[in-house]
Image 1: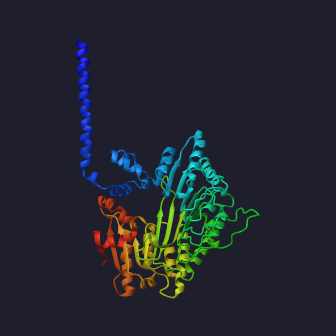
Image 2: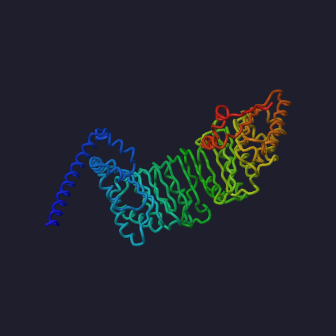
Image 3: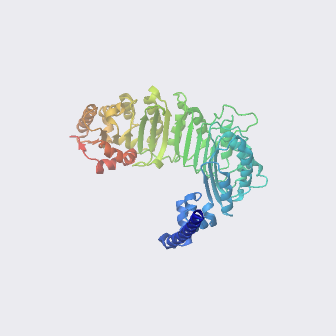
Length: 533
């Protein structure tokens, strides 16, 4: 009897709890409805969601409330940008369906399916490429075997399906490069392609891409990869940005049936990035005709002084061509090796003052320069700055010479550049003078080259707090100021900038690294600035 009463009571309690839970749910719904964000219009919410989730709406967004769930699932524009960090076929196909007929952007950062997932992946990509008519942007990264599945499926659809609206394509092989048939990338079916990036994937040299403005190609293993690239670019007169990295040498192996592409003209080119051996970069420069205003970045992946001779001649022709801008600024920096980074020497010329990253005209980076840092700086500056003397106006005058760190450049090298008129700076900035032998050598060379005083206006030296390592620099600066006054009859503006305290330096790290703003920081924000007597 007692057990029966307890059962009845528990049932009554359960019923009451269920009623209370239902009432609480209704109250929560009503409360959420009364919140300010719930009163926003559907159009405004969609606009907010578009900014918060430019890729697929996150699960947290979809499951906030019933209204948001229904709104997200019913608005096709929220599913038109499909970004997947990992291989998620259900999410990919679901987003394709929810995006309706809208143009879509697809990015798959990693094809990480297992060995037994290739067949299913082929089916998924088969379904995806049935929608090729509305794919505006496609970016896929995976291992060689996985990318083979992607491109095979892509190629199999070309006869039936094209990519009429595709504007951006990125295919990247992670790890070892693939051995794909170049025709497997159906560039011939992409008439509106404007941006193309291929990493470890060879291009189809027979494609014509008249709308291409940006092209980046890296890590090709095919014997005639360089020639394929040049042939492809024959039909791209609108090309503005070109990056070529780590391809086989152009003349290393060209099969007898392969017709040389000859000289390729790029009338609209704005920037050329070459990351290669010196000989390979020289071959590329001699296979191209680029505007004299184009920015050129050379990254030497294999160091050899003899190999730079032809490349530097090509640089000189580029900087001395009619219409080439004059160098306003020069920056020299050296990054000593750590456990994971090779030594790097970076020399850059800029066409504006103060310089900005977008105005560098010629940039040169070489790894492991060893003892030839001095010679590399000398020959590069002679190649890039000497042609500027041909216009007849103040030969070789620079607005700014920035020496970030150049320990391998000795006084004789600086003196030769100054005496020959290669370097005639108005302002000199020494960013690490106390620890940089090259900065001290430059001050000594300036003091012994009186004819450089005609253009020199300011010398600014950045020193650490305290006296450690700064005495030789201050002595050299004082000597330079004295020689200048004796020769010119007026004082040279010499400024010592003491480095901020560690806390302040940490706060200003980004500003300090952006050397274009150094002069403003010195005049406005940094304290303890002293003018030499």
